[in-house]
Image (cartoon, rainbow, N blue to C red):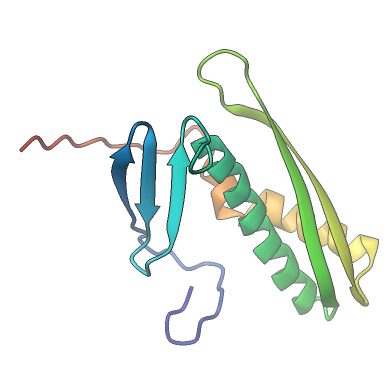
Length: 146
C-alpha cells in the first residue's frame, strides 16, 4: 500500500505491524497502526476465531489481486463476491489442508478465461497471505515480563 496515493502495488516489501490486546476471557483485539481492529474470540461470542480471520485474509488478498489483474487485462469488473471454505486437520496442529473458493463476477470484458488467469496468478504468484502459510516462515517469539 502506498500511503500517499492509496494504491495497491505488488513487489513492495513493507514491514507490517499490529498490536494485540487481551480484553477478557479468551477475547483479544488486534489493531493496525491505521486504527483498524479485528476481534478474535475462541468462543466466537464477540469476534471471529483466528483461523476464520486467516481464511478471510486469504480471501481478501486474492480478491484484491484478482480485481487488480482483471483491470490490467482491460476488463472492467462491476461486481465481485467470493464464497470461501477452509477444511482443517482434525488433530493439532489444525491447519488448513484445503481451501475452496467460489468467485462470482460480472463486468464488461470479464471472461472465464481472464478470471481463471487472474485467480491462477494470485494463487501461484502474488497472494502474500497465502504464500505466508508456507512452512519456511521464520517465527521469533520474544518474552518480556514486567
